[in-house]
Image (cartoon, rainbow, N blue to C red):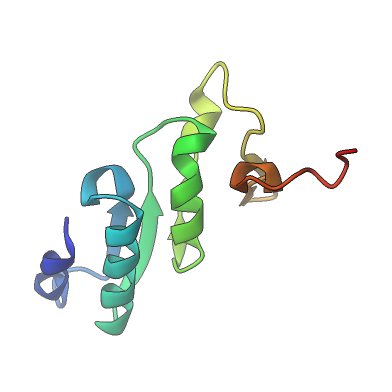
Length: 106
């Protein structure tokens, strides 16, 4: 799906499922989310599986979404450190994911 596909979804679907691996990346995903919301559509971010590193951009897009399905890392036997944390139905990325030092760092 691309940004150009959004107008054709109106009246046919209620929610757009954006997968960054398929739409062209974070920038295109953000544009799709904004256009879908402006058209009255719900927005969901999903994933194709992968590590925490591959979920991080989707985590950012998820801030604009009604539904987030970012469970790819839970199916891995080993993940990136720091790994995305799942707690009470929420997903959290450690500040170190974004290049910031841990609050506990000396």
